[in-house]
Image 1 (tube, rainbow, N blue to C red):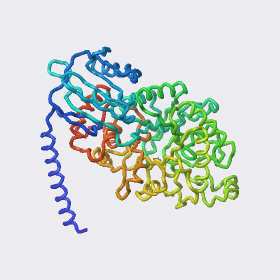
Image 2: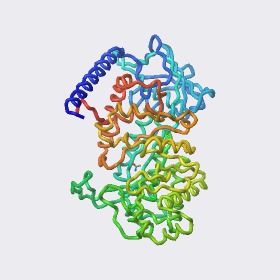
Image 3: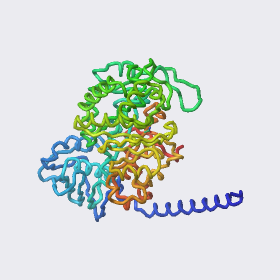
Image 4: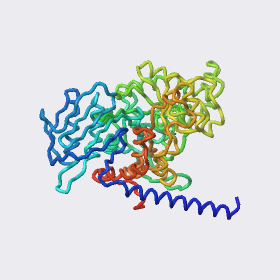
Length: 536
Ligand code: ACM
């Protein structure tokens, strides 16, 4: 393209951008300050005249079905606002069980003299509480008001997830609980806990103590990517005891969040191989890697002892996590170690496997059977479909069929692969890497994330119903400190929350941006330092 036309295009783009900014500015100023701001935005909201006002105490009447919620309702009001909750039969805040509603749905009626919440389950009741929290405004006299309205709300998608990778950098219980609190505020219901990776094994397995004695620690950490050649030379690591895991799972359950554990295999598993070298297809002694990137020490999937190991590990995992879904990773498997392993060659011959993608599918399907026999369902990254989405897979595609009940988490490849997974009847969660939370804010700004289309064009409703929802992921290479997690996750997590909850036709980035103010005030109180382009 000649230079002058580039310039012309640039000028046109600049003018268009200015126009859009001006329109956004005027639209923002048209919104009255006291408009109801809730993220994710409720699917039906009608504002009414008046407001419900109260001071530092509130009477509440909870249907018996929701007794389990009393503590968390009281502590939510007292911790954030210093408001005392007392129960009373003629209360101002009333929660009624309405069995007509779906599991996560709720209705909220705010009138000047009372607030009535309808929900079918304690989950709906809890989500209504989160809406109320965000609707509270401080009055000039130091009390509180909630604008009168009618809300009929339920989520667009079942799966509204957040992934935390602690394989690369261990963060600890305090951060995890903080994240669960923020997920709850945003009505996100799936905490995907990436507990193992090449650089660290983070969960105690009683039968294999070396997994954490050795696998949870590395001698140093390479700083950054590429060839910085700078290492932080301190020992790095940590892990969760089984008691810690139970504590976190209980904390999440109280917030109506399901914890999905991920034990990545057959690749991304050097930390386990460092602990037990016979697990690896090279059967060699290694140290827990101090650098990032996709490593070569993958499982020897021709060794019966490896299957026994996985069976033992999964038995302990399934006993700890009430979720009926176990994530087995399955991503980014470098086949090099299999190519040079006689056992793998013999396995291929015995099972009629034509290439290494077939070996991967054979392994994944065996693990799926194991998981199903324990009453659970397997989930994996989209490599479990057996298509070569990574350069190092050298175009090898599987000739085998992935176990039918697998949940496929789509992170890499074009929409044709996404469509193919749906066409073949797999349930799917959208986590495309172009929207990863560890991306820079230049490459994945909030607006781009907000405008992600969960179901690509050309997919009809019949197939679209297999899209369970959306999950945002923060990978640990960029988060050596808790403050790094906050920086990358906030505020983009709010855009993902709305993607998962609010129907596409109700989304509006201007309204969303205006409402962020409400959330940032809460994050400020919680000590969460979020990315703010103004202060950058
Ligand atoms: C992935 O990012 N390797 C799932």
